Image (tube, one colour):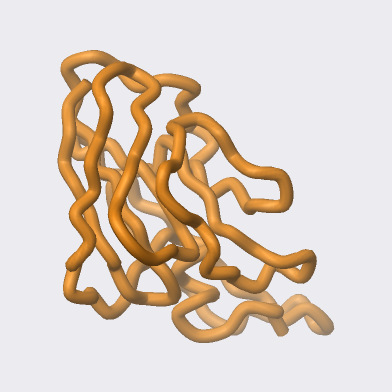
Amino acid sequence: MSLLSGCDYWENILGWDGVIGAKEKEIKVSEGTKPVFSWKDGSAGNVSVTRTDTLVTFRHLRLDDSTGAVIDTLEVTRNPIVWGYKAADKNGITQYNITSPVHFGEIPEGAIDLSDSLFALKELTVGLQYKVRLSSLCVWYGEQLFTP
């Protein structure tokens, strides 16, 4: 079986956010193609930036580690993650220690890259709309639309 379970499994494999939280944190976004994201108070387990003009369907088969048998299948259509990461310990378990400010394009040592490889960016495209989101284990802490 996978080390991840429940919301943590689907959140980190497919970017699924499950239960939507209060979205109470206001996220400020600096100008430019490599913005800085900042917020007041608290920390998060994940930070991500998605394109808002594109939808992609991901199909994931979850396999039993010992037998290789398919446990379940999930198809998710969502906006692709162009940059983001999960704060994790050495076993991949979410740590809720991402604090403000966060710099686009930087992934701290030990963090897990959440970018969708075909859509990953080193810097954003001027004129396209994006969404930055702070989340942890199926709860959104805040999100903000922005256009560099």
